[in-house]
View 1 (cartoon, one colour):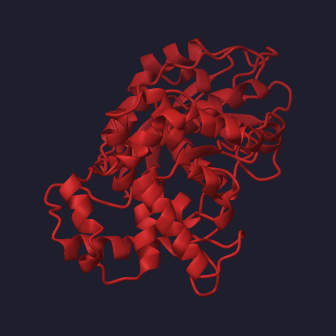
View 2 (spheres, rainbow, N blue to C red):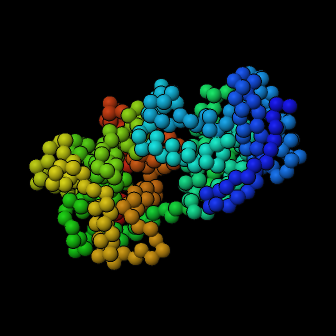
View 3 (tube, rainbow, N blue to C red):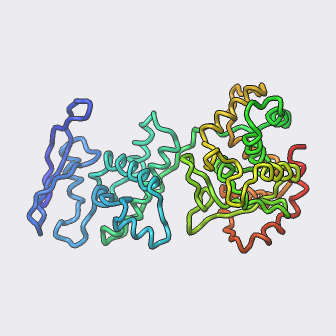
Amino acid sequence: MFYHPFKKTVKSKSGKTTKRWYYWWNDPITGVQHQKIIPNVSNKSEAYVYISKLPDPTDKQRRVTINEITQNMFIPESEHVQRLNQLGKHLSQRTLQNYRGFIKEITKKFGDCFIEDLTIPMVNGYLMSITDKSGSWKNSFLETLNQIYKEAPWHCNYTIIKPDFPRFARNSKKADIFTTEELDRFFDGANWIDGLREYLLFLIMASCGLRLGEARGLRVKQLIVEKHALLVDGFCKPNGFRTNYNKKGSNEDQKLRVTLVPDETMDIVIRYIESHYLSSEDFIFQREDGKPLRQEYLESVFHRVIAKAGIDTTCRKLCPHSFRFTYVTRMRTKLDAETVQKMVGHSSVEMTEYYTRAAIPEMIEGLNPARQAVNMLFE
């Protein structure tokens, strides 16, 4: 027999001791002794059943553990990241860090397990036992696990079938939408204690269904004045860095789009740009140092105006993103879903078409049937 079961006393982080079953064996090639935990067994008989199913260690087909597969995953300059780059998947430093965080969570629980031994009850059962994490966090855990299955073939020479792990319901509350009366009160000048700059930023969000990051990062050159349209080609992150691609996009797949601007909103914005002598490269809504307005500042302005306008927020989630929800809801009553999807760059139904700058005139032409609906947005 190559494998030998034994019971071992282990201590948890809380200091509690318990007995767990392990097995040891000597590597026939290196002579090095190894030991691994036997998952989900409670007695000697079950331990022997488990090791009886293990492959002969002298076979070339060697089973790999989660720890072995994930050792260098999502580490900058690693072979794993280089493979992703060659496949056209360039991940930011922040994304790599997020993945590494979940890798640590996965290996902490399942690191010593062979990947083909993972089952739905093991993984989803573990996630269901965690009560202090959201459904989104648990889905990110599963997505990282999915990446481990994709990496596994580079570490073993046999096929591994991934279980279809069920996803968790997201328990974060969606942003609510504004009524027509609430929009009138929000944009009533009498309720504004901040300046025209902030007023216009929120007005263009409401008028065009922009995300806060898209509005913060707007440059003058994005306005297509003669067509009363707007090119959305970048996203301003909370730290003030503006990308050259939209949210959910990348340098390789930018997900650019155009949307129409209501005539009244366009006229106000043009007058603002002219009165402030802004150049084509300038941010429309910029601070004194020329940088985009801070996200935290705009969120505080939003909530001050909500309070000043007396808009009821009881049992409701109203935030800057509510303008986007309101826009989509209203436009869907006037236009078909495909047209609205193109204008807001939504990919929840299907992947949004990839647009290039060369196609901008055709994109605007294709939105002409929506122009009347856009100008009736607040009616």
